[in-house]
Every structure is written in structure tokens, then in C-alpha cells.
Length: 112
Length: 114
Image (tube, rainbow over all chains, first blue to last red; front, side, top):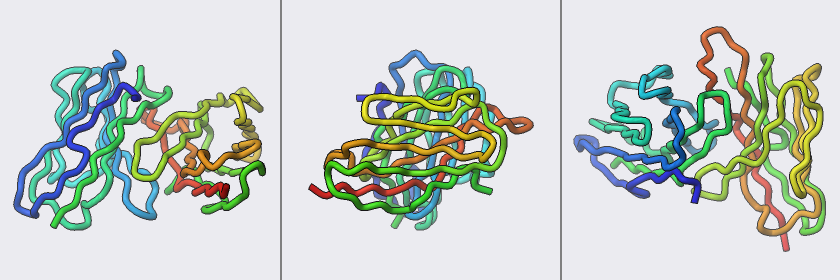
């Protein structure tokens, strides 16, 4: 139990669906992150939120839309995804950036 | 371009042996961290070493950092089957405009045979 909870753990969606991934951290951190992990590729940073403000967007396609309503919650809204978007999506948090990151268990996404 | 690169990509050893993994990076850093990931799970932080430190220990883990060579190594002594996992280094690079993000390497997959 890392203090970062992701739901759902597994998601299968069609290319025309709209779904969301949810992340909640119970660590009192003020920075949250979305990472994408695909087979045989390095962990890719997608978004960084610091004090609920997006401070980094690593050229992620607009079909991925993050939302950070408060410092404890982070969402990733998914719309018209492609099969190549199938991956493990990891949420993480830290106290300030530049510090140790605590990861959730991830959400396995399969786009069919 | 990728900041951290681990070497080897895969390592298979017998229980009780030591495992050494290396990480090289390209730019100056504030700190370097090592993480572990069991198959299909989230990453777990193992150890952080700051740029002004040369060596750090935590239980059976020993991390070294050579900033002149831009490299780090993770040594796991007396390995156990439960150490089977992927190990990643992550660097907090000193880059213009860097918001403090960690950049991960591709990882080393370690298999410890009982």
C-alpha cells in the first residue's frame, strides 16, 4: 500500500468510448503525475501537476485530458483512443517536485 | 533523448549471488533514484542519492554515484528469488525549465533463480 490508489485497475474500451482513470493520494503531497508505460519503452511522463496547476504537458495528444480538482485527486479523461494507446498508466505523487515519487499500482488500459 | 540508460537490459543469476546494475545519464543532475517494479505493478522507490554523495547503503542495497562519469550502479547482495523484478534509475536533471520531473531509463530486468 503506497498511499496512491488508482481505479480502475483494468479497463477495456472501444475507440469511440469516453472513459476516465482516477487517482487519489493519501500522503498529503502537492504534486501529482501521470506516466505511461508501454512494452519495451521507457516510462513516459505525460503530465505534472504542482499545487493543482499543470506545470508540464509532454506533447501528449489531446485525446488524453487530465484534470486535477484538488491536491489529492487526479483524473485522466480518455476519448477516441487508438489501439497504440493500450498501456499501463501510472499515477504518482510527491511532496514538491524533485523528490521521491510514490506510484499507484497502475491502470491497465486496452483499446480495442 | 533518454536521460537514464540501464545496463544490462536483462540479468539472470542464482539465489545468493550479487546483482549489479548500471545506469548512465547525459546531463548534470540534482539527484538519482532507483526504483523497483514487480511485473504489472507500480514502481516502488528504493533509494535516492544526491549529486554530492558518492555511495549509499540500504539493507542489501548499495548505490554508487560517479558524477564525473555520469553513472550510477545498484548492487543487490545475497540476492533472493523475491528480488526478481525490473529496476529503473531515474534522474532529476538540471535542465532549463525543468519542473523537477524525474526521467526514467528503460530498466534492467532481474531474474533470481531459486
